[in-house]
Length: 384
Image 1 (cartoon, one colour):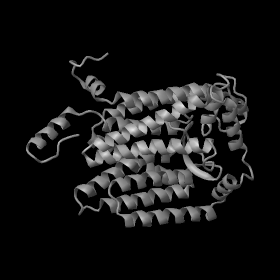
Image 2 (cartoon, rainbow, N blue to C red):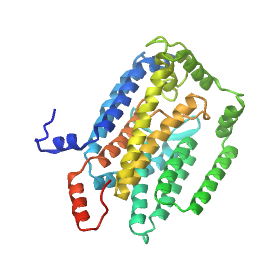
Image 3 (cartoon, rainbow, N blue to C red):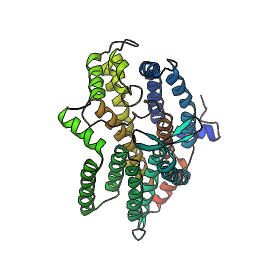
Image 4 (cartoon, one colour):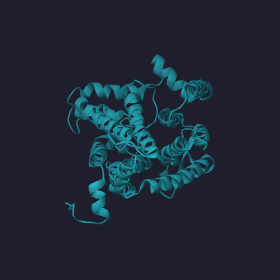
């Protein structure tokens, strides 16, 4: 245990970090590692790999992911902005490269192959995009003559265009939902809400008629006809699990779910550990979102408020989409369950997101002292 009297970067970090956030993120990663033992051996065997191939790789991904999260949590808000700006530029450039030189999987070019590693740049783009948009919105709120909202709209257009070009409509919807939530928090006029909402609906209609795989997934979801093997199997696994599950290693249906270790790991959790366990997982995600929004509500600084809200919405919306697909409440979409599903890019990128959240929600005595001084001089209102 680090003493309060001890001074230094580590001691300051330990006593100023939001330990509830930190515990929630580590708990989710621990659950993900545990579930990898249940979900991945069957997939590895189908691919003629060692039974624990994906378990070992999952453990290997955890180490740099946790290190990344902790390292980023040491940053100041200004350093968070600078880090996000660099990450956004690099990830956008990598997304452009992926369109021309990326690995094609099922008709999509989303990955860059570097040696034995496959990196999905769009995963790292998302947290950086949220932070930079938060900064643009906050600058416009601070000085209305600065066209921060316009730049945020332009940046969103660039990101959405690159995602559609891959194509990755699921990530486009995710980014759009989070960006729209942040824009609303920033005081979006109702005319903009109506206009952008209409554009989003129009974009969905265009995607339905332009992309056969989008139309196929929507049609299968609405009619139940066609190749619905994976979602039907996932539902069967959830039903078989009942309230308390079949027990560790006792799941049977999980063995025939093609993406049981990634997109449908929630169904594996339900079959082996039960619906109550899945409700606990959902509760942890809900805790992260609600605690983040509570931080944002109390925060005076516009940048921090918008960024924290956007980052927790990013995690919450992605988890909601994944769970919704597993429960057949949403059309099938290849989207991982944050910090739980197997995947190096996804896990590391979510840890970047978690690191940003931890950095921006740290208790900063110097900020409180400045606020008290400004309050005494009548320049700011008292804190709640």
